[in-house]
Image (cartoon, rainbow, N blue to C red; front, side):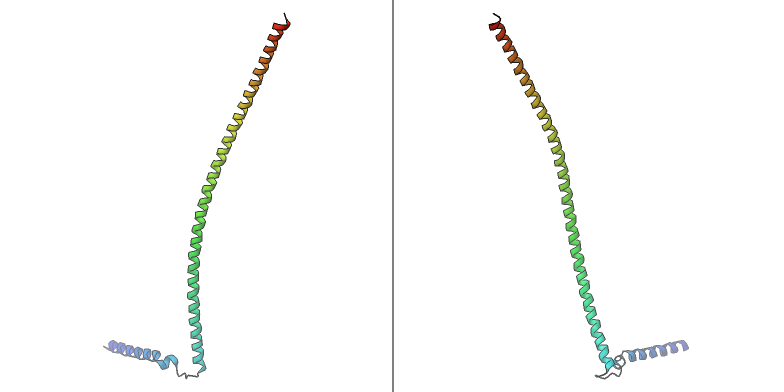
Amino acid sequence: NKTATSLAGGVTHITIARQDLLSPSSVLGDFGAGDPQRSRLLQMNETLDRTTDSLARTFQVAAETDQIGTAVAEELRTQRESLVRTKERLEETDQNLTTARKILRTMYRRVMTNKMILILIIVVEICILGALIYWKFIMK
């Protein structure tokens, strides 16, 4: 019983102390309208409000910057993929050009070989004609 009474008294004491702390006269004290401490507290409160607003704007700018950064990173990824595909196509084209050069060289060699064979055949025919003319008209 003594403990219950002691607890009830303690709770009452705490309740009274809380009311005293939260009462307007306790929060503002006995400050008058022209009290320098009161005006200083109001200034500090305004500064705190401005700082809070500034922080909120800063967080908003940071969030927007993060979104922009994400969009830029995505765009760069897309461009990188495009460049990789272009590089692969370029390498494939280079291989095709190398193959085409080899084929053209082979064709050129065959054309030159065919020309040499034709020239040789013409020279042999001229020699045969010359020999026939000599044998037919001069040997008689």
